[in-house]
Length: 100
Image (cartoon, helix red, strand yellow):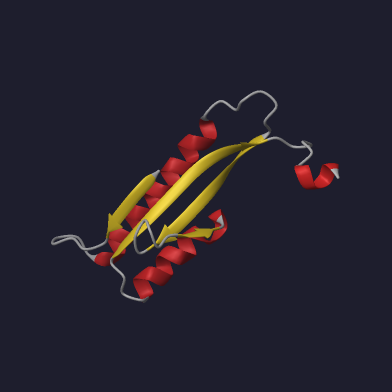
């Protein structure tokens, strides 16, 4: 998911628009977790980025993504970019740092 959200709407109030954005993100996560895992993978993890634009997006942890949206609203930033990339996690696989 790579989306730029605009929170300004002529008829819908801000809290409702923010709720719909959060709902869209949670729906994407739920659907992504239902995808079939590749062989050997145990669960889905997500790389997340959020920022005022695609070029200014910073990496954030999935658990802080919704909090960051609330921070943007509190700072009166009405347009922001969210990128969520699913990745399959294999438990027990040795990373290059662990092999040394």
